[in-house]
Length: 294
Image (cartoon, rainbow, N blue to C red; front, side, top):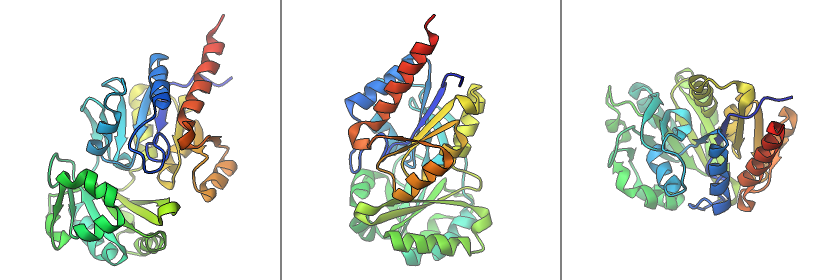
């Protein structure tokens, strides 16, 4: 018999949130609260930075100590704003990556600091054309610096870099990075949104991923790997799906990821637009309730 689940790591975009949505459904919110009430730690694990994550979770009735694994694992904090752990990417490496990634699309660096200059890029109009919703939502946090290298002086270490463009361009960017001198000094993970021909290549500090952050959070909580579930829909979720005792992939994930899920023994949840997270949590909570009955 499997031990009861004590930790749930749940992706946001494409998992808790349907495509292009910025609102978590009431059914999903109710399932998150029910999991917390059952004694399970619910961790939101997202590629978004914390400031882009908290407003969506505010008002759902989640506890202030709810862990947030943000920036694909580079920053872990609580919904209430308490810092847990963070990692930075060397400014020297970030400067080198500017020249490498610039030919493939938009390049943005994220810093762990509030307000304007939290996000730095050098071409706002190019970004607006490709990731317009993101630009509008984050406009007050964006600083334009040309060339981008000038925002990355020694000691000004970002937590994350991001290149955005078409799927084909980001696949080329990923290949270029893996052949470059910088490959050993950072991690990279790609997400894809085929319906919009949009891909994002996230650049992270060495060793950092959602899975790395989840493992460290579990250790801090005293939770075993076999007591952990993870739910996601994209390639940046793979490390946490692999580390968790049970990985669950959304039905709206790319076909290649769903095929990988079959090979790895990960389960499949319904579509995010059909409250797939709630379906999984409702089933899990019912099962655990039955197991505890005398």
